[in-house]
Length: 354
Length: 276
Image: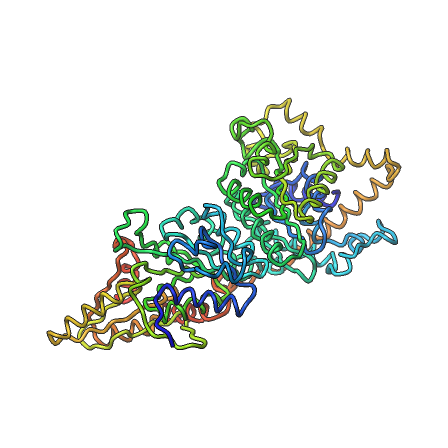
């Protein structure tokens, strides 16, 4: 969680300084994104949107190798054995966001719209398109393939509450219900979609009330309470893996930042509400809880924050200095290699030279 | 060797490819026990079961998005839109998601979308459209329109094996009207290659799908008056086989473009622009 927060702090600062064009902060969402993704195993899939950096870091990184000073014997999981080395993967993620050559899309976009499907690493991550809600059926399709193959894999999809108004939300959840697909759809309900508040978005009391209409399980939890999120997700994953079907898990979150940094949408939130939201920060809450359980103390918390910040600082510096993609990359074919791509290449040469 | 209708040729292609590759599966409305609105999938549910002949709820966007997800998991889905007209409900999933995935991520998405299209059967404005231009306009989609049973078979098999999304236009007038003897064994038709359906020297007709047969009929009539019409069956609209098209145009120098789709900004306009 501190790693995700350190990343956001760094990028928010760069956005304020005008060094990057746009940043969608995940501040406030960490307990939800990380608390849910930690319930997954190698080979499960995630489908992410704007504020899911925590889910991406959780799925990708073997944190034992990333920050060996913080972890001890026995902290490695079976999944970590097949995960790649964490720092190079984190470097590629930073290069992706800066549109560098070594990013996952070789500079074809500079955002979290990419996907990374590496079954050999246990990582299956499907990014987004800008049309929100469109990835919910795609996540359902991943779940369908898991049923067809009998793999027991679970799919975790994230959306904001705004996307629940889209037709694809309905179409996909209906399919999940009808086919009992192993999918958990997490609604990160931060109470504003860009600038639109809840009462202009939907009229039901809770979004999880929609679940019975699809014949799936539904639950609403405090998305800033790590343990509540983890418990609800554990139940949802157990249902999915045992063939009992999908879950709509609504996580109530505070809007701690604007839609994108500096786009003016944060200014529309009343001052009193902003203060209430900021006081709901899930990180100090979780750290206090861990301290109360005797699992950490002030010194340990400070050390974790320091190490996380150092890792992010050096990662970002390397990505900024990393090479830009070659201009020829822009001409990458729109077709995957094969008969059609060959025919398209012939057509292109006719257009250019014929 | 058996006399095979156009629709049976599609079914044979689906059957053969499902036998060959366990990752090939079908999704669509009413395609399981019912065998599809036009019976293209008749008998396949009984043979392959509900997880490979997936009867879906009444939705288009959801099924196309789900096919994309399944393809990312290694599957090769073949979707039936009950009528081509209904594909408009899934337009966003095709043009923004499916078509752009390879360019964005270099992740192959081998999805075939079957579109029973076109008029001529008295079915009204929502069951008769020819939507090829919507998809020909979108980078990342192959668009094919076989005109004979042999090519319906061979192009479906090739489309299923290709790593790209393919819009497969099947004209409903052809379903049971077109029949031919097809040999057993593996019949593949290359994608991206046009076919000279009839050689001539006086005028070229460029066409595809149902109107190939209209053009051939017209050519036979013209021959009676001593006019030798060359008919090019494009077969694949995107990518266009310019080599074959340009060769005929250069040889003869007179061209007629024939299709039944909308004229304004239609596929014919594209053809005319290319050969101009």
